[in-house]
Image (cartoon, rainbow, N blue to C red):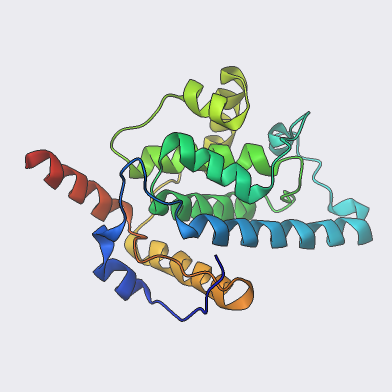
Length: 215
């Protein structure tokens, strides 16, 4: 889906908030491809660091909980597309999940995203972001099936993530916008992907959904 990219500001993103369709036939949000690209580049960088410095491997047993015994045979983008296909989580959920991933890594400096832990981290942060953004959500057991985990493992990952984050899940408008800008820079650096104008902050999504219920 490569195209010529141009800058889209958060202000423009908000001006066209409601263009994204939540119908069953809606296309996969382009932010998924952008986020996958960013995560993959982070993993490649971490792999180079670990090869040069073995001490860079995390020894924290709390964060090792995200390591999968059997990693899914899917690319990062395919895994994110699977999550979208079965949960229909809107674009803003993936932006908020990206915020959570960044906060988690800052709170756990020794933690490095790699092929063993990326899938567990993604399904956990997306589930948490969905609970924060959306009014209606699937149960943990459903997210577990989508992510290829057992319900017990999914529950354990969620608890570990929440405690590691200090339950700091609030994402205000300015933070949301700053991460949109970061994703936009990812577009210009390595993707040629447009971030669709449908990325919106959690407060605005909830407001829109409430208005729709009144109609």
